[in-house]
Amino acid sequence: MSEKTARFVYADNAATTPVSPEVLEAMLPFLKEKYGNPSSLYSVAREAASAVEDARAKIAGLLGAKPNEIYFTASGSEADNWAIKGAARANMAKGRHIVTSKIEHHAVLHTCEALEKEGFEVTYLPVDSEGIVDPDEFRKALRPDTVLAAIMYANNEIGTIQPIKELAAIAHERKIPFFTDAVQAVGHIPVNVAELGVDMLALSGHKINAPKGIGALYIKAGTRIKNLIDGGGQERGRRAGTENVPYIVGLARALEIAFARIPELERVRALRDRLIDGILSTIPYSRLNGSREKRLPGNVNVAFEFIEGESLVLLLDSVGICASTGSACSTASLEPSHVLLAIGLPHEKAHGSLRLSLSHENTDEDVDYILEKLPPLVERLRAMSPLYEEFMRGEKIFKV
Amino acid sequence: MAMLYSQKVMDHFANPRNVGEIPDADAVGEVGNAVCGDIMKMYLKIDKETETITDVKFKTFGCGAAIATSSMATELIKGKTIKEALQLTNKAVIEALDGLPPAKIHCSVLAEEAVKAAIADYYRKQGREIDFDLGCGGDCEHCGH
Image (tube, rainbow over all chains, first blue to last red; front, side, top):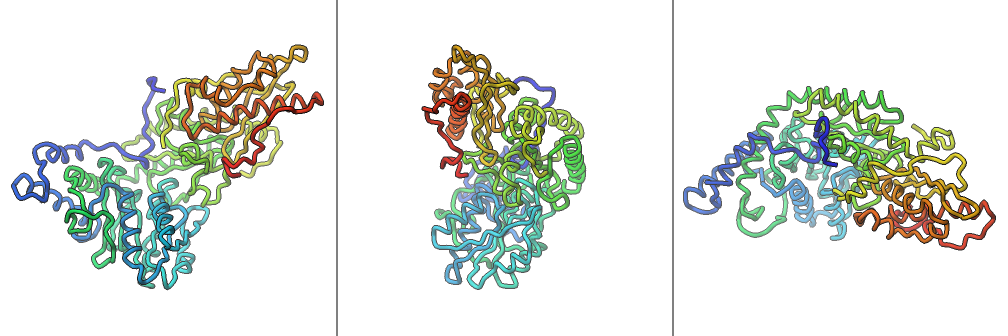
């Protein structure tokens, strides 16, 4: 479906974002003339080395950390893997129990599952119907042999924001290190590691207009953690691999811009609310997934009964709207989104969910366009849905 | 994970053939379930003299591939005798669509089974013994439900 459409609306910013011109401009010298390996001794290399350290200092300043607590990785997934595997393996003498939640990103869930195969025990905490971890349940799940707690800051599918400060404080009462995957939160809501009191925090560049393939892990000084990638002595001997200088520079620039823009995201929040209200009021048998209040400024996730999400995403693409679905058919598995199941959606409703994620680049006209195009497309799919037919005939009673 | 659909799949998804219901259908078959995310319902009009499928319509709840395979299956059996329609395989549906991503093969299986379920309904109404395999009884291990 590549025909020219009336409008192109990119509403999948939680999946990835374009590299901004300012970020690209900051990166280009390090792809061209300043190509030196930061470990070398001559001047073109020293320029690269100091660019990496400048970037580290900038990022540390933004996050409320010290520069020597910031480590660059090749992705948010690598940062998640390192934090969890590294901290778990470093504390094996104390115990082999990890506490996390059922709605984590697969980079956390599958890492925990891998550790289970190594003999660790993992508690996957349930969440309430809005997708929030209950601090009391979190406290109860902590055991004398718990060596790590890992709870995401904001959910990638439903945008729900967790009470990280409170959870980290509870973990610290028991002297348990606390890690948060903040890939969706950083640059969208204020994030300060000192205020949050977390021991480790993962972030990713491509969600905030830096390129794909760069992330970072904050590791509070004194945190026990083993290496994930051994090799040369880069990153003070803790993460080997020649530094990706242009991408590191790009990440720092992108974070600077994103942090400065956070107050402006009130406008995105207003767009989000208009989109949610518009959808729920014009499309019957639809519901918002996740918390209305504790929600990322750009996240809209709605379930439409009687239809399947992938079909809707394909039809939206045909009118120039990029969105996504957490439904089974978007992956190789037939299971619908683990997040939607965790907030209590039955399978059939979880299959019919749509995520629209807005950014500062979206406009009022974009929201108007989505609100114009979406209802007839949902209606079109319902018109060919046997579930809708049965429902309209009253053959089956569905709870809405 | 992005799915690469063939142009034929996209065409049958965006412009599905034979969508709808036949109010006075001679046979109706429904396969799949909402839990797995796919339901196909097929309506047949059958000429009793020649046992030819004179009209066919479908309704499907499911992904792009589920809608496209339903549409293609209806095209492949329209105008055929029920004996010929029983020969329809999921492989024939896949070939006619210029292929399906591996994760979507089950949609073509459902399309084959929807045709068989509808013909089984016709046999039942006629008091005939169902002498062919219906395939999925809704409890196959593929979707685990």
